Image (cartoon, rainbow, N blue to C red; front, side):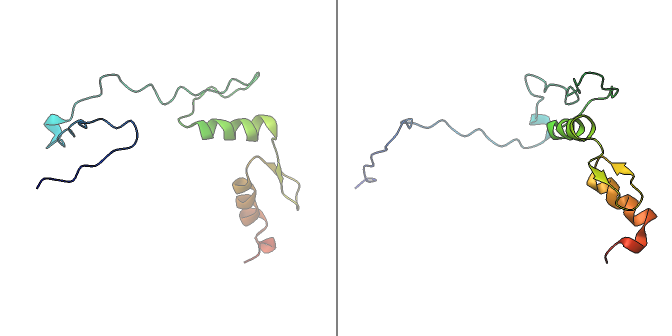
Length: 104
């Protein structure tokens, strides 16, 4: 008596492809056939932007656009009026310049 007959539903191959063997060491690890694109190719295209550097992550580029071009100075200090582009910078300012106002 052999294995039971099973009916597969869906576009499954009759004979699935063999799984390639896992590389045994660095000698078997080869470079990819096509190199990855450079990760630093994200640049700000905002008209008049003075930043000439590049970004490695798309999220960093969007943060740059949001904080410097769309809504700069969105985080003011409520004591001295200085404005900041990121909440982290405003909180650092509060800790350094107005520690008595920080809640512990």
